[in-house]
Image (cartoon, rainbow, N blue to C red; front, side):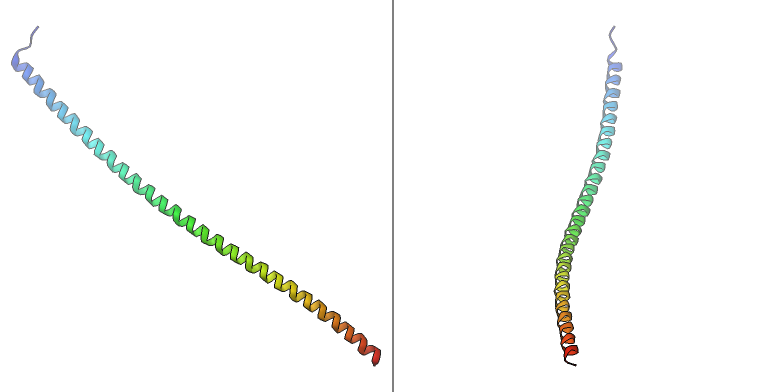
Length: 104
């Protein structure tokens, strides 16, 4: 069975229109996906920048903590030195009191 030329031409034109519509639909879908990709890339960049800032803050806090730890150790050493000095002075004072009580 052979189709008349007019019907074949109509089928061919309808098929082309259908293909054009499908292509437009695919192009619109691709454009939408590209927009989603761009939005996700922007989110990734923002999250990466946030991570970098947090990492910098952490490093800064770690430096401050180490500095405070060193300062605390220095203060502790100074306190121990002063404590030893006062212990020594107390001993001298007691010795002086004993000498004074012996003589008077």
